Length: 213
Ligand code: HCB
Image (tube, rainbow, N blue to C red; front, side, top):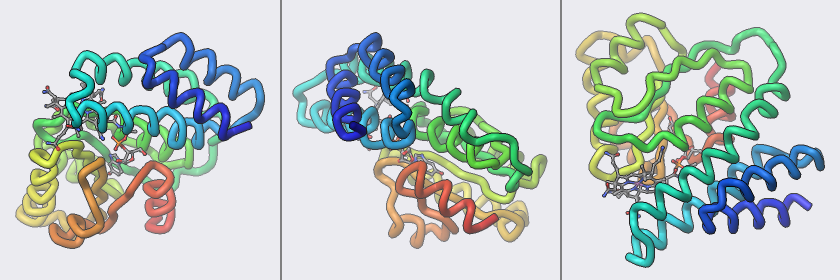
């Protein structure tokens, strides 16, 4: 069942077992199970647990890297399936998205980007460690409906406020909706800095971008 496979995937990420993660993802595809649930409730659940154990000092950075690699191996197998499910509908609009300055955490941003693509958005992926000015330039150049930033650290989420400020200074703030996300980011933070959309996870991001389109 979905729950069983999600739980196996979670364990395999926590065991840093790339090959087993790949096998489990293939098994899930063959069984016609939900790839989105497998990413969010399986692979991501494992990654979060690894983060907690790292925080508690039970694991070290190489463990986090190994788990991230296992997670990415699974996402790589599931992405084509998601893309197939998406089909080729008319574009719902453009979303420019990147991981904020000083931050190289890309897994969550990549999942959001993939799921938005699958849902019919045209995604402009700005990458990782993206300068605030690059977000502003992307809005100028691509005129997206939404500009999204991802921040995984309390030290980098503050830069999301800079995106708001610099868009205002460039006279572009009213031309675009801003979206923020990442583990330490909350609705309260979005309210505080004046971001239009806070998304807790990729499903939430898709639902909120859809509602805005
Ligand atoms: Co990293 N790291 N890390 N890390 N890392 C965190 C984030 C800590 C919380 C771990 C901890 O201490 N408990 C911590 C940050 C502490 C803080 O807040 N200050 C931390 C640290 C400190 C660091 C380094 C500084 C470690 C060091 O070098 N000493 C370093 C950072 C370097 C830098 O960025 N300049 C570092 C490095 C790494 C890697 C490279 C080993 C690896 C990243 C690999 C990669 O991304 N390619 C990594 C990882 C994997 C993590 C944890 C364990 C998991 C992050 C993750 O991928 N989660 C993380 C612990 C945690 O988050 N609890 C830990 C899974 C994804 C699917 O979830 O939350 O990213 P997500 O995304 C969701 C959601 O937030 C939302 O949708 C996504 C999908 O559902 N979303 C958006 C995300 N972005 C969005 C944008 C939008 O617009 C909308 C929605």
